[in-house]
Length: 106
Image (cartoon, rainbow, N blue to C red; front, side):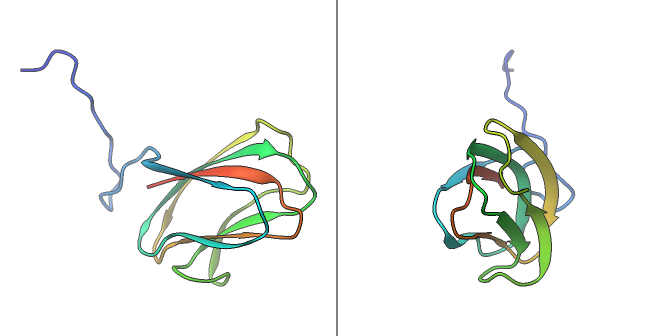
């Protein structure tokens, strides 16, 4: 029996309750992070700009339920703990001159 076991908590849908993956978003455009169900955990601001970064519950495009949207010009170092399930997928849309963010998801 291990004395220092690592424990991972899971949500009701079987996804890790902590971020299993991270992806930086640094330029304008649409990026699909996950093409199936998952969980949006965190959004960390790494560089501030006026453009908004929006995360959708969608496997391919910028429609459907908005899971999160940054404010314009957020403070660098701000950590948003979102912790929301995504039924269809996780797609990020960064407007022109977006803030750079790192997305944590599972």
